[in-house]
Length: 169
Length: 169
Image (cartoon, rainbow over all chains, first blue to last red; front, side):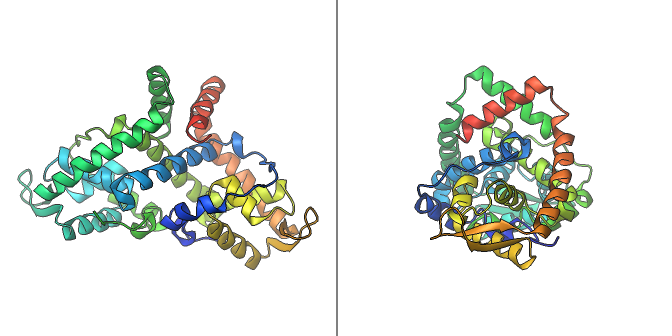
């Protein structure tokens, strides 16, 4: 069955989803939801949607995706890092990283130049402006995190992390 | 900072990501990954990526998104369900549901007609073809699930579900 080429096709994560979701709430009959609540994938996805919704409302004025934040964190922790190493680390494709880096370059948040670690490679470095942006984003990100982590005791949270890491080893 | 309008902009979940990810693997220095591993959002997202990658390789010949599967399950369990109730149940926006239903109509997997539950509403019903497709998808979905749930004891899995449900109440 050919239905949707990819997730992008339906805009499931577009800002419009976030904006219309509230308006769409209406009294309705309780649905029978079949096997969904017993599926691991369903529960992970629902949790991710809840986190994504809060993230996009509160971090980077709704204009920053989690992958972009992660990329900036990696560049900060690894000055001169190569795009390919970012792609491998975040488990996203090279083309995506190229796109994100390009946007950050346009915003003058990073520069690409000959790596001091490996002169054959182009390395990515945060600019002063990028560092400032990241510091602001990090605080917003930590506030966002706290809204969810406070739902758990520290023991429960450690347990949740350990279980999730079995899924993404 | 205006960087990415939404997740779609970078194609993070496009099939091309899945195809190129393997080719992109190359020996590289271990990166310092800063605060990422201690973020709930990061761990949920990484787990979701791992599940999504396996799902898109093995369910519906790579052409079916999880949301579409969930929608078909809801229509099967609630014949005549309204689009708005699907949107509310799955926590996705109405426009996304309209798009998914439209695709399923084109594939003759569902029909929309006056609801037997509420005659003022249009209800969605699976066709015979849709039911057949769903039965095949469900089996593929359960095989996909098993590849992940077997990483856990039944007690651990129950615990993981309980913790995830606190995030998406």
